[in-house]
Length: 249
Image (cartoon, rainbow, N blue to C red):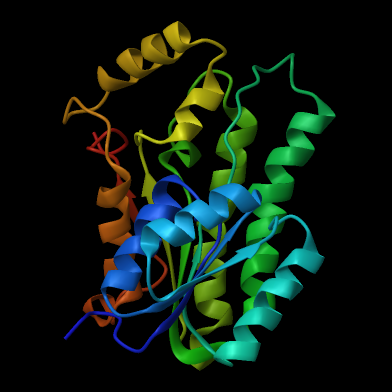
């Protein structure tokens, strides 16, 4: 039997990267998956790629009206959520001294505010005993130049996993965080201005990873599936690092 047979799952930011890989895996494991994305063309392409058991809902998690529309769509078709993967996020660099209000507001608006209300607005539909997975990052504990705002947003996400575990214990809803390290996604390109800079940045990161390579989105997706399924039925409040050992030694 598939690990998510008959389950209803919502994944934000699933047009590309980790979210898309997770949506594909969830659908193959029997879940009905709702995915979101900010760009309709990418969302449509993701739905086509996943193929079955998927519904795409355009929206930006930092826009609360978009979240309301997402959950109204789920309620219309299924009236419940078994698994929520709050994955949507953005990564941008700015060194201390060059941080702008726009940079701060964008990262906290999506990574913290957007994630918080993604979860809070899902609560009426979440079943007792359900699973919430938050996409954090090892950036919450690893100091890297020019990433102070991004790292702070991910530290907030890690804290949410702890506090919401207590808030939701009466309903036996498990809340866990997955913390990827360097993963081969399009987000890496947003951290440098030229392809040459991207390659230099990747090479410098690889040298800090014990496994000497970047991870693949599928490898994070498998960790999320573990936290979503009954395989992790006695696990809550944790941070599961999928980082090739980078933040562990």
